[in-house]
Length: 60
Image (tube, rainbow, N blue to C red; front, side, top):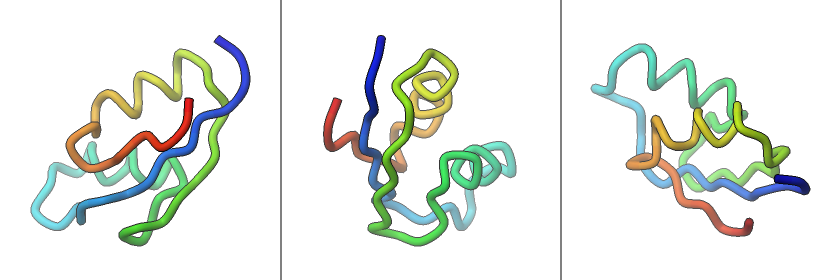
């Protein structure tokens, strides 16, 4: 895996477990509809997979 991926926050973290909130902050996604470009590595992929119901992957 190399390069970057773009991730967009599509749902709020209100009412979600604290773990999900911390993952979203670690991904740099604080506001709804915010897009962040992240390195494409196993640690980022693992975080995205844990909150896949709250985000959308735009580019791989």
